[in-house]
Amino acid sequence: MKALATQPCEEVSLDSVLRQLAPQVRVWVFRQLGPDPDVDDVTQEALIQIADALARFEGRSSLTTYARRIAVRVANRHRKRRGRRPLELVTPPQESVTPERLAMDRESIVRLYRALDRLTARRRTAFVLCDIEHLSHAEAAEVEGIKLETLRARLKHARADLQRSLRSDPYLSRLFQETR
Amino acid sequence: MIRSVQPDRDPLRQLADAAGGVDVPGDPDLDRSVQTALLAAGSRQRRRRFRRQVVTVSALCGALVVVGVGLWRSAAEPVVIRESVPAPAPVAVPAESRLALPTGDRILRVGEGSLAVEQVGPHRRFLLSAGEALFDVPRLGDGESFEVQTPDALVRVLGTVFSVDVEDDRSRVHVFEGEVQVRLENGEEHILGRGETYDTDGTVDWNPRILEEGEVAAQQRMRVASVEPAEAPSVMAARAPSMVARAEPSAAPTVAEVRRWLEEGEVARALAAAERGAARAPENGGWHQLLGDALRRDGQRARAADAYDQAASRLPASRATQAGYLAAEIRLRAGDAAGALRSLDVARSSDEGSPIEERAFALRVRAEVAAGQLDQARRHARHYLVRFPSGAARSWMLQLTNP
Image (cartoon, rainbow over all chains, first blue to last red):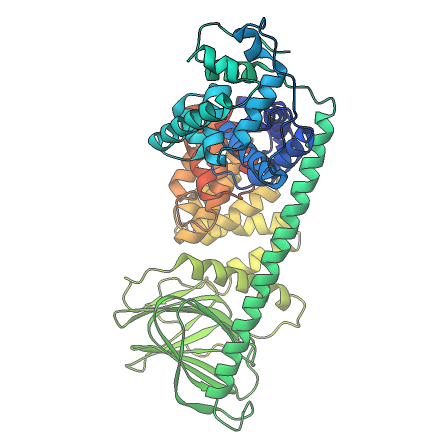
């Protein structure tokens, strides 16, 4: 840290900050969108917006939270532009497939993200941050810039909506019926 | 690849865990993405800055047109430059405004108060009944005059930069460049030269912005004057004994003369004269500042820092902040971080409202880091980012707050 004192201020560049953030930004975008061919483009747009916004960063939150908030918003905007994607017809899983195996099935995850697409952006973001990315409620509330109670309410509604939606999915219905 | 999930759990939770365990495909070209992001962000910032400038310039042009039309209408008809025309009624100059007259005079009005244009043309006359204003008046031609009437004094000029501050019917006049005649109600007259102040009461405080802008205007005027033929000084009256700051005896060079020597590269001559001046008038901060400049040019940086510290403790607040900053910068470069912090503290350079607050604050944080006061430095870095979100040291402060 002492070396910073003798280093001219301008030499600590935006470049190094962005380089450290870039891999994380890609992960955040992927978790928000799920399997999506546009992950690279959305990551690029998020990096541009973060680079642009760092000039105005006031240090009110941690840099990571600030960048994550931007990545989430860019992903949400992309999803809104893209619209809902239709579900492909697939053969239901065989009876011999265990619920645990079914939950890990790639098709199941695709269907989870399709169900998430049907939620409002706020509820979906709350679910992805808390249940998929395993952020604490407080961390997720900070990323979203909302109160803890609001976050909890959104998460509760998101879970209920998803339960309803997935239960009626022919591919996943067995998983939900068996554990009802 | 998907990591395994625990059995016998809520199926939604199982699905979410599986989704969270999906490995994110790596991007082999992340470096190029970062470079692209930096270029694109820079381009967006430039576009935004350009748009902001266009809006600002348009607003300024609009404001100038409004002021110009207002002045033109108030200057009575027909429009006269050859003859002085009293305004039909004194035209009030709005607070926090700049006024540029067709005669080249520039007036900066700050804070609350009351300034009115009474007369325009060759004989310009203003009425300042309260508040503070800076007047930048080009050299007056034959038959021209420029006057500011305050409740207790009449200030007349012969091409100068000066400011007048009126509080509770007490006036204070400071001359940044040129000469000004102050005539009191009782007929007493005083001539003020560059750097001199006349104070009818001694309780009037200067607005730092006035001091800052006055110095800038005076410096610009001096640069122009240096290519003009020298003109004999016009002394209008004997210097009054009640002046707060006095001119040096005629045999000794003035601060302005010595500074000119320094600017012309006569460092040794300027240094010797500045040392004599500082010894002769130890309470005059201007000499100490000049001595600091000369010592720094001469490479005697440690002595220069001492001289700047001396200047900072004697100069008016706005100039003291700059002297303190220079002292602190020299000390920090020499590895004396504690000394740098002391200099900044004495001059209050990084205090809120200081004209060089941003630079001085950045210097303070660097000095704190160098002095090992890391907690303090981080706290101040966060404060810097809040106060100066686009400050020059922003990225450095970001590094400090997010190690």
